[in-house]
Structure formats: C-alpha cells, structure tokens
Image (tube, rainbow, N blue to C red; front, side):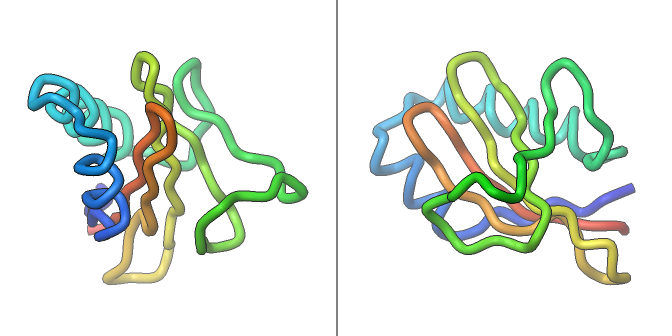
Amino acid sequence: MYNIRWDQGARDDMRRMKLRAYEVGQIVDAVEEQLTHQPDRESKRKKLIRPEEQLPFEHLPAVWQLRVGEFRVFYDVAEQEGQGVDETEEYEGSSAYSGGPA
C-alpha cells in the first residue's frame, strides 16, 4: 500500500484554477482509489509519461499521469521505504500529488 502526499504546488494549483469542492472531491477520490495500490501499473486511466516529454515542474525521473475526467494528475512514485508517490502539479484540469509504500 502506498501513502499519498499532496505537494503544496498541487494545492496552490487547485486554488488558482478555482475548482469547485465537487471537482476537488472527484480528484481526491480518484487519487485515493487509483494510486493507493499499484500506482506504477498502467491502466485505462494511468500512463507513464515518456522521459523526453518536457514538464513544467520538478519531478522524479518517472512521471505518471492519472486521468480524472477533464483533469490530469501528474505524480511520481518513490519506492524507498517511508516515501511514496511524490510531487504534484495542476495544469488545465490537471492535478499532481505525492505518496509511497506504507
């Protein structure tokens, strides 16, 4: 099981985007449902971003994307004990978050 840690940038992005409470709830629920177990396994809603793609935020080497309706959640997975999915950013319907193995 992975711990999820939200990056301050993700929180700031959600405020900047002026998301409604319902939209924030959708994002949080999807992150908890999809990323608590096997966040590094591709699925219909999760994909690995190619290393050559430029992203406008700091991140660990492998960046993943979770699709939540019109939003995109970008995240890293830290496999070190005590860490988890790491880094989050918001972009035009996207959110980012953090966490790792519990």
